[in-house]
Length: 410
Length: 112
Image (cartoon, rainbow over all chains, first blue to last red; front, top):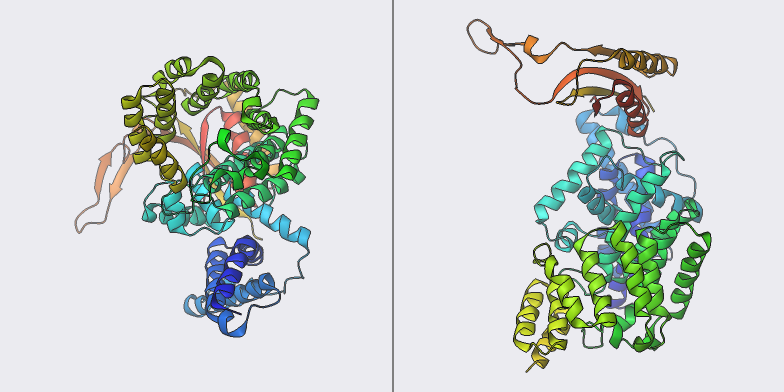
């Protein structure tokens, strides 16, 4: 086995098994901090040992066992030092072998703990990405453009609060479930978006393990609350976005916008599943929430065989509904993009003008403005807007695309 | 696992007045509920902060006595419960009932 093979095996194990190892240790030791540290140590041992020993036949089992041993070592060391008999007491009793369903349940518990409403939203996202997604602190800090030390502290404080206040490690009771699920969805959506369009120039432009993780977790949550329209909506939205992943970045690493994508590259299975979910929700006749509307918009896009066949009036109508639920300027900006197709760039440019103050630091605002100005043959202004967008964009594929568009202006 | 204890502080802010008879009745009913399910440890109401006296006996000389609360704030603690609960979810559920009963915000804080 070559060095590259081993490296890939470790990366794959990290992607597939991290959350499971953390979840399983959290259940056993009742301590997120310990679970996280022991899991990290186990992966470090894998990096060290697998090149000479070979990749074990069951990497997940190997990692869990190794992490368990690391955790027990640490508890023994600390018990000796601090005479903490209580910590040592947790060691009694061996874990029964875990079934797949049990593992999923453990991961679900982990996500409900990390997304607990007693934690600040930023902490929930950071903690979920660390504990469930397996991202490192520097990766999370870069993803959300905050200082590494601040992210580290945020995670440490959140873990300390979970422990001190005894935030439980379990799926919430039926009474609490709807509110708790909606909190989880907000976190999953942020995780998905970070995978779908990484905001950092140091990150890969698309991180499929993050999008896959978000989708996997959304599916788990859906099993728990199959009747919840927004869970179905978010899952559909993710599937319809994920379906276009390979078409979204060119071989040269440049972003390919929706109307220029090779629709033959779209994943038909994911689209079919996404459309099925959207149709199911429509059939209930219940008023759609935010994720269901976003999913419906994506369903319209993915129903068109050619970009020119897009039903823009339908897209704008859905955005009109969305604007009523969500007054954020970002939604208004996205609506204007659809308006440009229906009523022309001039109308759209007027629609985004009032958003300038709120969205001045948002690259997509300047990119949208640049495209509209370009279509109106206002080259000088378009160039300035591209410059602003390029300066603000962090995603490498997006930067490459915007740079080419600007340079085409001549 | 052993039960946890939480301090549920009742927060008095500008919107609060003295407890009304309806609120007192609701608080009594809530307290009875806490006792019935074994969550009750202790509860009490506090007189207003201007009745407070601060004493500092850390120095070498006599203890220094100061009139008034140790910190002037717009919000202060008007009373509290100490409850026992299995975990924060249970404590938050009880605290939500308590907040409804006394018609005030409450803060939930675990004991060490």
